[in-house]
Image (cartoon, rainbow, N blue to C red; front, side):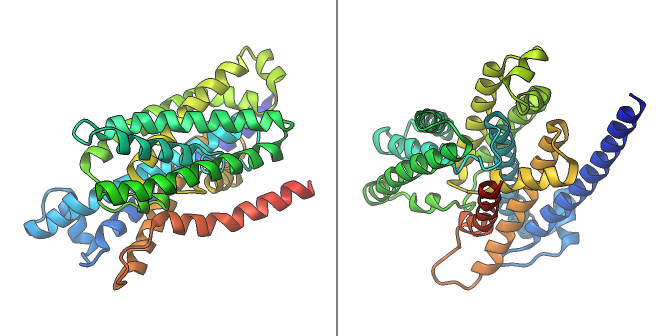
Length: 344
């Protein structure tokens, strides 16, 4: 018992040290993100703008009204997708599971495109779009689970079912995106690859609210998620209903993913890579994994967006989609995990 208490105490100490370092790095990343763009702004002026002390109104407008919304969106979306990945990997007990691969992202985008086509734009607010995307994510996830069970219910069949559902909804999304862009003259194709351009303050507020709700609920579920990772029987022995845990976790994952998709489109592999990095840092206890994943997801997507803006400077074709960067980074990691899974 003494050794167990000592172990948990040292684990908590390591967690708080890691958490503190990641928070500092996230603040630094945020400051760098606000300083970078077509006009470079020094970090000290960024700090003055954030504290309301910058006298230059033009620079203050660029930092607070243009760059801050985009940067905060990258932080909340990265955190949301990472936490969603932790939830899905825990309830499916599958290290390869994540919102993009299991069809949640493509389902949300397909329903969103359909809504834009058939519902008048005058009544279609970001809140309605997010609600419809949420339904799409749930439908896609349900289809993935049903298809997986129909072909054996193994970890590999879940991923294959997810890829099949993702491909189907991606095809529908692509077709509808062309129609939306041609008929309504709305830039929709870019959302197929994920973009953080032209983020509105109202979208950032919605992202912040949804992430806060999802994060707090996920932390509250952490012990249940720990139990279900050892099997349904173990969960029942501890007094937790595994079906309830799966249902609530799936709803939270769909909510976090769908709102992210409604704002920025499909940004893949954050939900796959980040939970694994968090577990390497702190172990498998979701009470620690969830907060670290949220911070790591924020940092990685914010850094990806910074790299996109730097790489896109001077390009005649416009800005590189941030989802292309995360997919390029995540695909080799997925291949590595898949090979490790097959070998084991």
